[in-house]
Length: 334
Image (cartoon, rainbow, N blue to C red; front, side):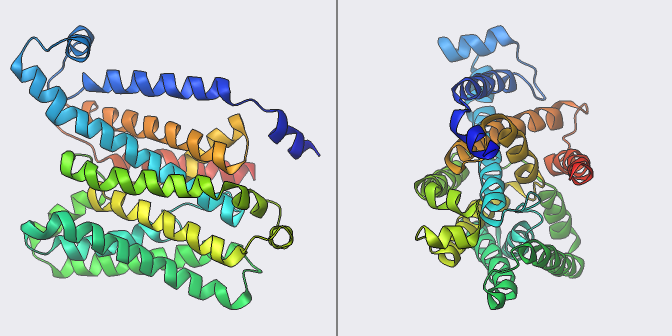
């Protein structure tokens, strides 16, 4: 009764307004941070009128704007994928990183990255998607025989598959040449340095379309929050719905990993924070998690670019450090 009351009467409009304001501030502030510091007045001048210098115009619109958009959409997609996986499995520890999807996408992208440079833009996303799809198929193969009676086996199987695919990736890197190995290792740590318009035209449609499909099925996903039996009573095809959600998560995670590398724990942390503010229903959780996740990754990238003089920290290192602490605190609370 308490859960139903919280879902019914909790008004998320104020929080959505705060999330939107946070997004605007994050975008504006992140424009001025980087190797070349640009003051807020110059950023506002470029946004509202015209830049006072051609150099500032090039830095803001051709370098930093694609990077900020990529950071926002990557954080959006990872947070949405985490929220979907936690709701569909009813497991608060579910996350694309722990589920094996990131490891599968990383394996596919690693194999494709060893091809000639001319094939990278199109071969890496496809290879990452098939790697993520392979991880999903293996995980589903473990739990499908018990007809989903033990949903927690999804997470356990995902962790095992993640270690398996990560070991294959490390073996490929070990046997590769030094130059390609160093490039792939840095890429696997996570970075937004590859941001450009071509990358955005690939990632943005996949993330937005997948999120919209999930919102369209939000009522069926809400039924899963009760139990599989209750969802079946309401006419929900539980197995097919779970497979659909896992494929959507695989698609979003694959394109993000293909161009941004391994960015862990975003999908674990953000849904828990948003769920405490606006509730557990899927549609509200997807929108809120996406906005907060996008802002979070923008600020992580700001720290990565500005923490060390003349050097950029891989964003996957920062998110893994913060996420590991959050994971331990979450387990202690549970």
